Length: 160
View 1 (tube, helix red, strand yellow):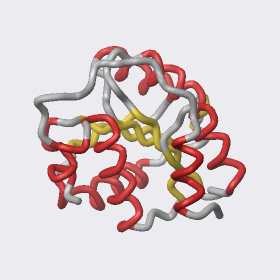
View 2: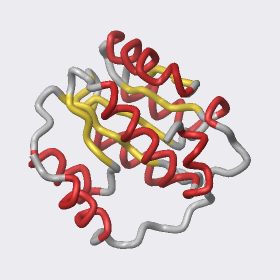
View 3: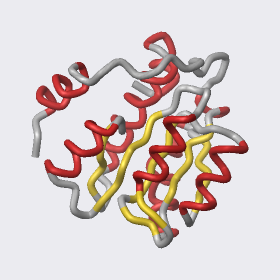
View 4: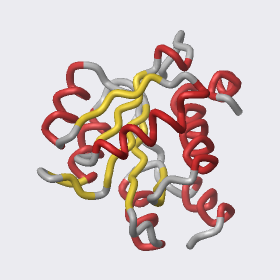
């Protein structure tokens, strides 16, 4: 697995993303995190892990549902299973990339390896979380994602 230092270097070497409106004026309890997985246990695990920070988690069981949700109300943080019954994280990333609001995609997988991590970062995703979820890692990655979309001044609200 890649080290944290090499991940940081890889992120900083990516091309500059298009300018999008930052998420502002929101505290964490107002922020909708979209969890995309056809496994209800994934949604429950994320709700449990992130409950201490009072994140608001919405669940989508299919790619179609997730895309509909993102069109209706963009989520600044999307946590998506690598493969979903009707699609993959690539389709969700395409929708996240079109959002007028700064958004990031975190991909989850039981087989989270260096290849997947490199692919996610190279295509514009934020990070990869291995399953079963490590509570500390999930909280850290989500807090980092919130900081990335809302700016460093909001980091305290993310429970850092």
